Length: 121
Length: 108
View 1 (cartoon, each protein chain N blue to C red):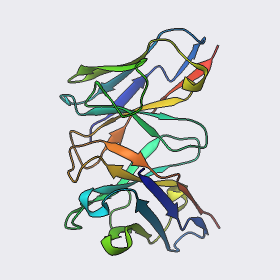
View 2: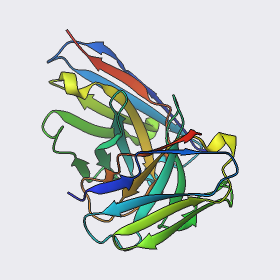
View 3: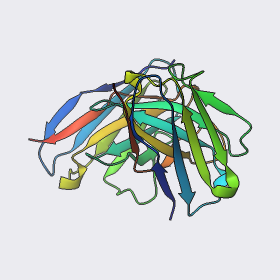
């Protein structure tokens, strides 16, 4: 069974940094592209960033480019999201999501339970 | 950026009814469209991909159709566990991957 488990969320002040982690199990981690998707309180889903299975390619939403960095450690089966310069509008539940293959023109097929990031002074 | 528009925003329906949710795209997607279900406090769950293919374990009462810019998700006979928010998502033009704003199914 595919499982994704996020951690690392919390309350931070504007301008601070936070790193989210997502551990994958039940599948060959390097065979799938992965992504982060967030959901602000009471709002819809917003794609944040994606990384290929081989870690070669990364993509970012305009709203986070230059502030967030996605990475993965294949040996640890872990996906990361380094978030710097956090703003109030980054407050959201952050989900890691697996692409159904190691390609980009494809849907997400599995999601973690999410981790809440709150940016507030 | 491809804009995804879902209608209606909220739909009040009774168990057992047939319901159709709509999703429109600002660009032609072919069939690069997925539908997700999200219940309160839970992560989204994949229902449909490729516009019409049910994901593993999804009941046959869920069906998707459409291509290009117009898509629909139909639930043939609503069960109590189907009351949730439904999102469509395009993966034809990326980045970014974009979602509709969601349709909430509530009990009439």
